[in-house]
Length: 78
Image (cartoon, rainbow, N blue to C red; front, top):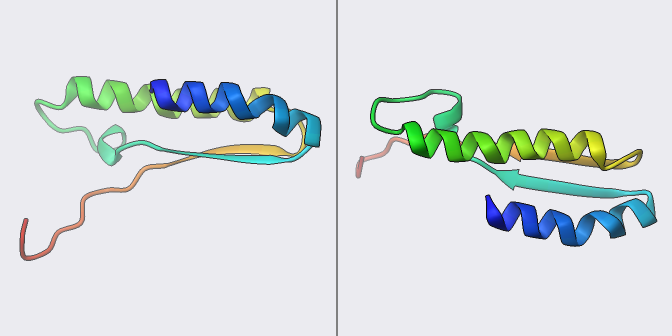
């Protein structure tokens, strides 16, 4: 969460000045499909998603903010 906040705080003024910008953050798929024992992990990632949604509203015209929530990938090693 800290890195999302600090990076957004740094680049948002430049995005507003330019009238254009894109912000993309990553949160775990645990916020979409919670599992037992991962409550704190899901809460932290939910904070990233909520912060990103707020940034999208506050950034102003021409700027967007999105969060990517990749899920699990099952292969031979899982």
